[in-house]
Length: 125
Image (cartoon, rainbow, N blue to C red; front, side, top):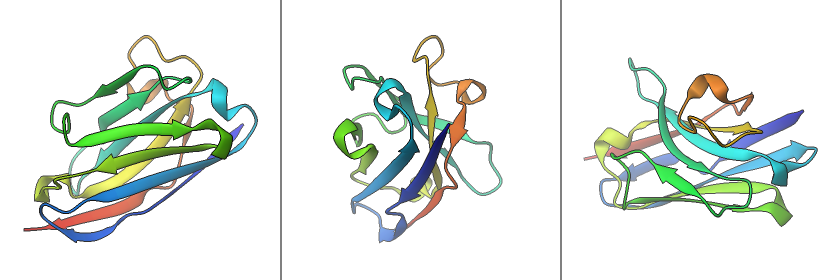
């Protein structure tokens, strides 16, 4: 079992940066692949970024590539999402998630086993 708690969301202006954190409790955090997803008002949850258990492989949605960076610190049981050059369309509730296997389909919501409660990000124009 893994419990995930996100933090770091807030209200920012377009062009600003935020760093989201997701702290995991439970066993063997370092053996889990991690992902960040988001859900905007009235829209379905979508993939943002994913990271292998070692941190050696990362993937991003096209909409955030070059602006967001996913990373992890296994010693702190924490995964991060650094978000730069934020845009109003990045407004959403952001969720971290964990799964044992990174492949296949690292972007598939249904394949993640554990989810946090989400942290809200609002970007004003």
